[in-house]
Length: 197
Length: 218
Image 1 (cartoon, chains in turn red, blue):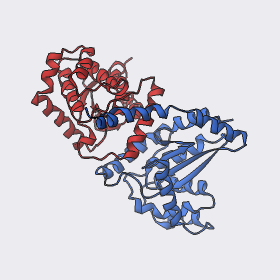
Image 2 (tube, helix red, strand yellow; image 1 turned 90 degrees about the horizontal axis):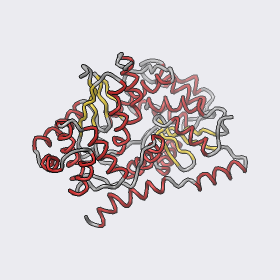
Image 3 (cartoon, chains in turn orange, yellow; image 1 turned 180 degrees about the horizontal axis):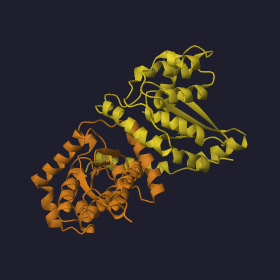
């Protein structure tokens, strides 16, 4: 395990988080770092308003960026509320069993490219099983108060670090906000001498 | 799930995404415009107190050189999400972000603390009525963001203002209204032929879009 770590603050309700996923989880392959997945409660569920102009722009901008990145986008099913919270709980369980990468990528693709409703057992089960997770354990995770507390701790920590949105990458004392700032993070990692040879 | 929830969560957002991929009318309009001998046009809404605006303006002016495209620089003061609880945090973070973006172009940001919008309002009023807005804006933004931490006072910009028309506060308000009509809610925002981008985030994409519409660099 690397001595260096990147905290990766992620929301299942954020399409920009979805876009960042494959490149974020690939970072430890290219740099000598550990990537720590930190699922957070969506901004709109934390009392921050998202105006219509921003919602419209986000969908259009993500559609363009997804095309550039060669990722599917749409049809979508907004998981705000129960769906997002269930994914966050299962995300913590997936971390415990070493399948966070698989679950985060499958769940976010299901939400943002296949319109899977993760608020339903049927939808959540589908993405869990695709990620190699057993449904019984995932179903139990959804109701696990300890896992929910971990999500709240992640969310509080993002706020304490002075940030509001996602995805955010925290490396040493620097924060990098946005899927389009991974290249700046990579520069910081390279400057820190962490590029794998 | 109720019909209303289904519409809000799935049908409407998915339809917006599908509609955003319809590009033929925009390309046809651009082709007609070129046949009529008219240049492409980019509207750039920016703020003097925003370091990311400084990076975007400096970059776009260079990036559009050699293309048959006009760049309209439109200074604004009022923008952002009303009542945004993260407004001050965003202002702080913009400085960090702009420093990294500037470094990509080999530039070093000179200022180390954020500015309040009111501090630079006089520049927006000057720029909105300037006879040569590009020259004025480029030089003023360089002085504000790349020349150190000095306080902004009108005296530092007196040479730029010499011989210029009187400041035009109404023009700044017009720019703000026009920006909201086009869709952007914050700066820097580039609007080009029906689409808008956060300019500092999408500088490469703006160039690519102009290429798609037939306004490549010669």
